[in-house]
Image (cartoon, rainbow, N blue to C red; front, side, top):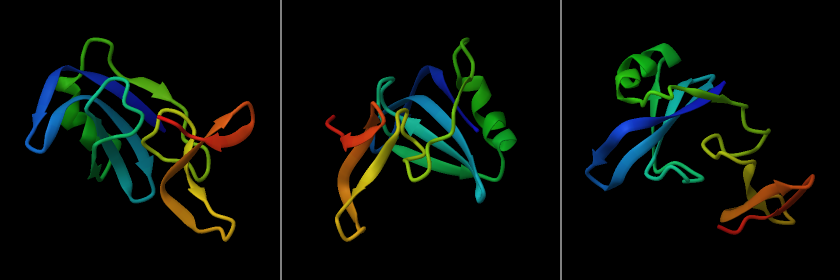
Length: 115
């Protein structure tokens, strides 16, 4: 399960732009809360790990705007959990990840992601 919400007001951070959007992602090890510094950001700028979605919601529900939470589908296998579109790390011919290079799914084909 994934869901995201916009904050009522930007939440300042010490090491960057303020947080304006958050996303919850439930994983085996707990619930990740991804923080975004722009409403149109593709990937998060920081993340937190909570024991449960309920615990994360208790801490953040008062900060989200009147639109509330919007549920979205889980990421495709091998894709980034914090990305709003199918996005994965590109792999070389040897199968090893090429960190910093990404691919996205377009018309059923994996193509180079260009920001």
